[in-house]
Image (cartoon, rainbow, N blue to C red; front, side):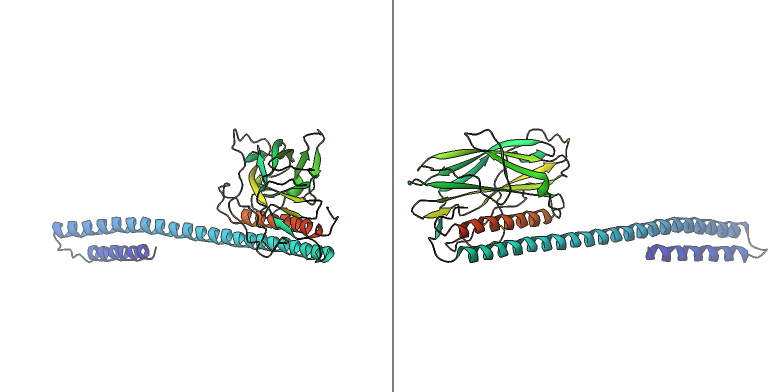
Length: 332
C-alpha cells in the first residue's frame, strides 16, 4: 500500500509536469512539438489513473488484512479463555477426586488386607456404537472374564459415563444415562456413577459373565463427546482382593437429535492415558485411565481436557471403593 501511494504521487507529479510543458509551449512551437507534448500529457494521465486504481486496491487489501488480523485476535482470545476454563474445571475435578480418596483412606484405616492388581480379570465392552444420536438409546454388552486359575468369590463390575458438549467446556452428564441388567433379569437399573453394579458371585476360573448395558441420551443433549469407563474388582471370603489395573475408556461421539450417521463402527478403547500417577491403589500401583478423543477429528485439546477431568472423577470413585473395602467385611 505504501509503494502504491508513492507510485501514485509520482504519477500525479508527472501529469503536473507534462501539463506545465504543454502550457509553456511558445506560439512559435511546431505542430510536432505540440503533438509530442500532448502525447506525454495523455500518457501521464493514463499512468496516473492506473496508479490511482492500484492504490485503491492496495488500500482495500490493507483494510481486509487488518479485519482478518482482528478476527484472529478475537478467536485466539476466545480459545485461550476456553482452554483456561477447561483447565480450571479439570483441576477442580482432580482436587475433588483427591479429597475423596484422602477421606476414604481416613475412613478405611491402614489395617486390613492389601488389594492387588489383577490384569487377568478383564472387562470388555462390545456393541457400543462410536456415534450415538441424542434422543436414542443403544444396547451393548459388558463381559467380565476371570482369566486366572482360581475362583473369585465375588466380582464387582464398575461402569461410569462422562460426556461434554463439543467445546469440552460444558459437562452434559445429566443428559446421558447408563443402565445395566443381569442375564437373569430384564429389569434395567441405573448406574449412578458412584456405585458398582451388583456382584457376580462367584466367578469361576476361566469363565465369564455378560452384563447387558444400555446408554440413553436425552434429545436435548447437544452434539459432543463421551466416554464410558469400565473395570472390575474382586474379593474373596479369605480376605484377599484385587482388580483391573486400569480403567478402560470407550469413546463415542454424540450426534445432535435427528442426525443420521449411518452405519458406524463400535467404540474402541482410548489410547491416551492422562497423568494420574498421584492416584494409587492399595498396592501403590497407579490406576491409569484410558481416555482421549483421537477419533473425533477435533484439533482442540479441550475435549481431551474435559474427558480427562471425567477420568479423574472415575478414578476417585474407584479408589474410594478400593480403600474402603480393605476392612474385613466391608464390601460396598
